[in-house]
Length: 119
Image (cartoon, rainbow, N blue to C red; front, side, top):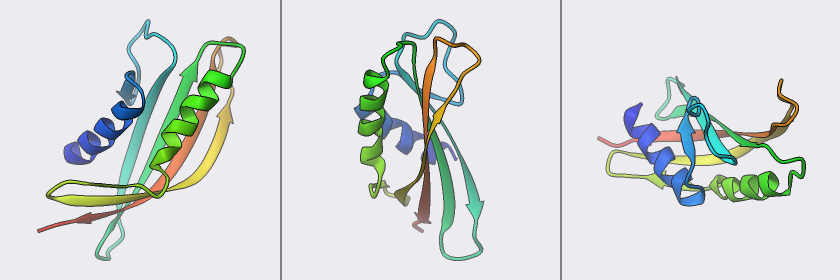
C-alpha cells in the first residue's frame, strides 16, 4: 500500500502543494486536499482501488475550491505507473459536502481504478 500511496501522492502534489493522506494537520492553510483509498482483491488479474479526494476551503465563494477540484479531475482516465504497478483512474462521483463548521466548503471526488501489479 505504501507504493500506491506514494504514486497517488506524487501526482496530487503536481496539482496542489498542500496534499495530505487521511487527515490534514491542525492549522493547515486553506485550500488543501485530503485523500484516502482502499484496495480490494477481485480474484482476477487486477485489484480494484477506490480513491476519495476531498478538497477543503474556508471561503464563502467556492470558485477557488471548484477550480482546485477541476485540476484534481485531471486524474480522470489518467494512468499512473512505476516499475512495479500501473493504475488507471475513472471518476465515479462528485459530491459537494456540508461541514459541521459553517465556514468550511468541501467537495469530494471518488475514483475507481484498476491496479495491475508487475512481476
